[in-house]
Structures are given as structure tokens and as C-alpha cells.
Image 1 (cartoon, rainbow, N blue to C red):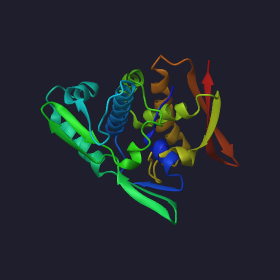
Image 2: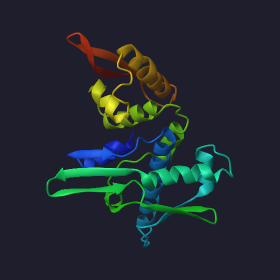
Image 3: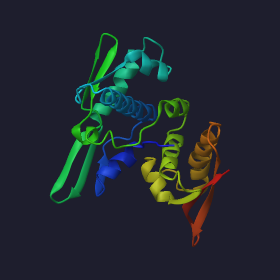
Image 4: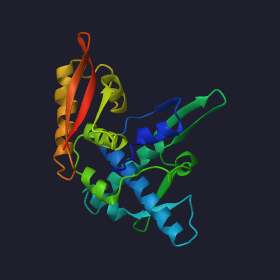
Length: 232
């Protein structure tokens, strides 16, 4: 179960300091993961055939994206809005005092005669072959997620595929889920609004070899960690 989480991929490349200017919606995250996966498939196919390809431009039929998101065949304004947001979302990074920079998630896109042509900044493109993207099967699994928290947790599972349990701090979970500091301060609300729905949606897929469960862990009088457990 090899997955890509946008934040995880960026973190693996730019480990010291990362700041993403916007919190992406669930649809925008799905769209970006879809584009990354399709791009990697196109590159690997052309390389296996010994064909030359243009690293600066990729394409996909617009109707495939419309079908994936159930937008209807003619609702191109939804696609335009999503793609525009990806071109506006800036990632700032600082590896050291001598190496830092910024890039947008998409370098650009263009709709032309039924196709969407798009390109990535070199910081993404230089590593796209190395990363673990969703397979087309996994993309179909996540398309029905209603909660962005489910998607983030599902992606996290890919980082812990070789262990049966793992523990994460609540602060870390809130950070990668883009939960504001003043949201869900009461642990019962965090569990009710975030953890319970996310775990329920993941378990509802019915295609995994395990069921996911979790326990809240206290440090002193305060809950600080979540222990996730795979039940086979």
C-alpha cells in the first residue's frame, strides 16, 4: 500500500522548514494526487518503450478528471477552479542558511480541445519517479472519502505499512491535518469530529487486510498521543 501524502513528499525533500501557504481542500488534494500518479504512469510507460518525452508538459483528458470527481461531463469550471488553486498554492522551504526557496504545487496548466495540459515545478518533477504514488486502484478507493481527515490518515498508513501499531502525537496529527490551533481543543471533540469519522471511513473500504483501531494516550492529566492499531 504505497501512498503519497503531499506534505510527506515535500517533507522528505525539504526536511528543515516547510510552509504551505494554503490549506488544500479534500478535492484539491485528490486532484493533485491524481495528477502526480498519472504523470508517473506516463513517464514510466514512455521510458519502458524507449520513447522521448517532454518533462515539462503532461496531459490528461478533461473528462477523466470530471468522471473521477463525479462533476458531470460539462462542469469544467470546477476543474478550472481546482487547477487554479494548485497553481496559487506556494510551498516555502529552508534546508539551511545556504539553501532555501519556494515553488507552487503546479507550474501551470491549459485546457485545449478536451485535454488538460499541466506542468510541475522542477522541485517536484526532479523527484516524481522516486516517490510512491497512489495506484489507479487506490485512487478509486479514496475518491469516495467525504472527510479530508480520512485521506490524511489513509496516506499516513502507507508510511507504517511494515508495523502493526504506531503512535503519533495529537499536535502532529493536527498539524498535518491542517486543524487550526483553536479547533477541537477538547479531546472528546477531536475524537468525535476527526478520529472516529476518519477511522470509520477507512474501515468501510473493505479492501484492506486489517481493521484500524486507536487508543488515546495520556501524559499526566492530558491526552497527548494517539496509538493506532491494525487488527487482523
